[in-house]
Image (tube, rainbow, N blue to C red; front, top):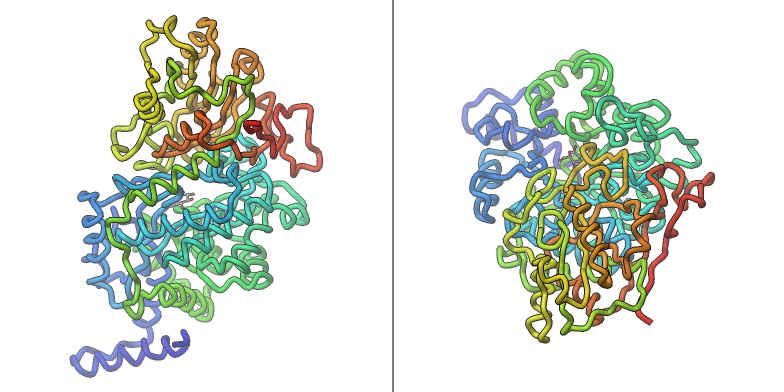
Length: 588
Ligand code: GLC
């Protein structure tokens, strides 16, 4: 069924209903208002199913960590069904399932994108997309605000770990594969954040956000060569259904008001036919009143406004703007048809949307997939021959990353900013548990008791960043005692150095950290990124059952000045690079 026919049917449907029920004929104004309501998305905490009759919104989202009071699979399904039962046109429900269905208690938490960039395996990405889609659809949800296609150029950015790489071809291939997997399993993907979110200049943002909402000051050629590249593939090869606009600016112009980049380039040149959605209250960063912000963003080509709180005012104001002629009815019709197209493609309009069975949540198949992803994501940066470990070795495991699934998973895990402990991640296998399962099977010993330091063969030093998301993670100091590094790292570093034992360091972090001075004290150094709930993928490699295959998706800095070390930077300062983009050792 074409969308135009659908539009006519909508009117006809309204007339028939009114005729049969003696309701007043649905008038043009009401039809316009209902179409405008389809272009607004509210957050579940501020929008109840009972409000749908007056405000038949097109979409509802869960922000980071936002879940129903009954957080079970049934509880999620009941929540979404609650909205659907009150909706004439089914709502689209969206979440950020950026490394598995991370809002859901008990879900499989895959490595964040930076680790998957190190793995650099398109087939793996496709399978992760399918697995994520199944866990998302099992809870009745239709739309995933992923993948991030940022081509990050300054790793001080708090969202670096949401990016696959500093290299646009790697981002394109992995992002497209993920989109193909996710959408092949019935969930709408979101290419985000359009455009050049990973190229903002440090400190160019207003307020406390150093990079997250800053300004990308680049030539159009550079923007197109590096940052537009992933969107071309996402549309042409991934047929991505939605695109989210970036808070940031390009050369001082906010993307949320850029008709050139959204309408002329994304929709015109690239032929994007799906839905363009704003980011969380992002239009409020545009100048002027809410009226002016809505006019500017809708006329720039945005089709749906993510208005978690001001959804009512947004509908009412947009109606006024159309009646005043400040937004054309053609623009509303275009946006409405795009929303209906996505709903039709997902099977929402004909009731064919399929929910996976609850048994897929953290299934053995998904655990094995995540374990494979973890193993492939690890990058070996130094090895004096101390790796692979002997399975009967006596090991002292120290540091904040030793036994903490929260730190292993990073931001966007159960809560928006992530978890500082594993208490809300009961499904996880921690690094300590992974070591214990090998040691117990092969007569080895794993201890975290530092008093036994003289009885062990080797010290495994598990360093870790605290979790963070978005601008909260913007770093000014990437040293191991710098931004987002707890004091426990320093204590563990000192203990390992004083131990006079061979030291294997495993770093759990959302980006490279400055290790220039400490590296000489380590006999081996492994980057584990933010690997999630399946730590057995780490011990599979450390004990030699699986070889290292990971390669650095980002250049590794010598210092915290990281604004010109990217391999994509024509003015790259290679003297500040400790390990190059693409570097990674393996067992001979
Ligand atoms: C956030 C993020 C975006 C996310 C959205 C909904 O501010 O910028 O990536 O999808 O809000 O949670």
